[in-house]
Length: 403
Image (tube, rainbow, N blue to C red; front, side, top):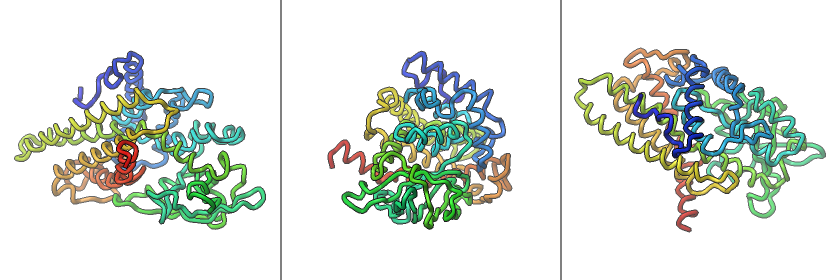
């Protein structure tokens, strides 16, 4: 067994149910995870929408698309620990990122704060992966300071007229809907004037423009809204309460912020590269660095598992969420940087076309080389998205030190 592949009882705190669940997830991945998708993930190739759909459709019979949702809304009622185990084990086994915008972001907001009509209209298509969502939060002048957003929604009868711009909108090119923070008032605190709207991406006035990231791939976009008319029934909850719903949304992600399963998979890649070249002069140095990275990962996993076991899903997120985000993202980057150093000259040659194939290929060096370079380039954003690490440190200082 690989040193980073946890045994069936790992990460369950001695809980027999946790051990059984981890084994069940691993068994499912070995037998049901589409082989083509798994191979692309393990090679760090770019995944198309059809790849993510194949993964999601395979999850549907198990009810695992949104296992952390309450049973009354179509989920399995997972505990935070079960959710962590599923996310970690599936990622370590080669499953894709479970794109969160419908499943983990807007879905819980709707089933917690939405109207009866909204629940009936939007939750079933999310569970069936029949409709895809994008997150309309960041703007050119409102990133980490999200309360500075200026996209405006003006009420006109039974509609809101929305005008503004969103940026870094992941996979908006695939989305059927976008949940969007908009400004409906300028009175009082900035946060008090923000509302939460559900916007059909086919509505006239919406323009999506791609932003090519460092890896040469199309992950993110600019979204322009020019007098887009949105039915007032698409307002979630109360007007002016969007900031609270946004904080609730973010708290739903704290249990998986560290992405330990992904780090386990990437560290295994690095170890295989080092093992394949036993004659290399600097191999002993890289063996020591591998050991250091493994220790960091094991410490992070222990912290995450302890946090998940103690977590109250109904409580506000604590500083633990920020700690997991910082340590997880920095570890991912450290693994990728060490991998690039091992590749050496082979890591300087990169053609984005090679990561859009169905199987790994390289014009020079290891066949996994292009995918590993892409992972390094795309991973530079890990310490920025989801709340920049500088902001996370401010959160920790405020919550734990009172600064």
